[in-house]
Length: 190
Image 1 (cartoon, rainbow, N blue to C red):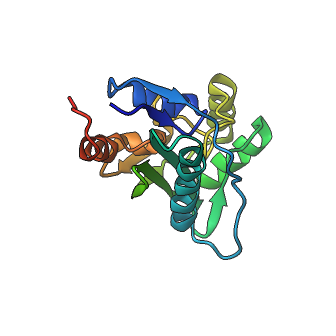
Image 2 (image 1 turned 135 degrees about the vertical axis):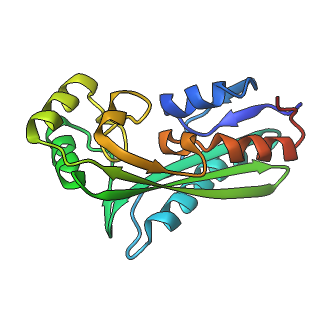
């Protein structure tokens, strides 16, 4: 079998891909994550996931390369990774009582062909007090997560509901689609 490469250094994507039991390498993609004017969040997620996979596949044409990117949005506002406690508290305050969308793009490049997928997850946040937000940020420190929370951990307590075709997409890698894509390029799963 050809080697599988995850074109991401995200520990969350790595942990998700490990669930499939396929040996893989991790390579940091040489792809920038710049915003393009008037680009829709879903289009950005697809563009960046494809760019990451393509960048690594150019170096390793022998491999099956997986690229993924997630873009969170609240209406027309893109919610990047907060980076620090202050920005995280601000994002969560804006999300209080609102519905956010998390667009997770995934691309698989193998044999010069590219398979692409987009999963959009809707998250309804409950009304959050400043004290709840501060306690959450202090406990979990989700500064490297789009939207400023970790749904796979304590962040789940911030929600009223989640609507998704694939719950792993909210964490950063849509495993249902990815398993199908890997089967289509020759991997046996399970």
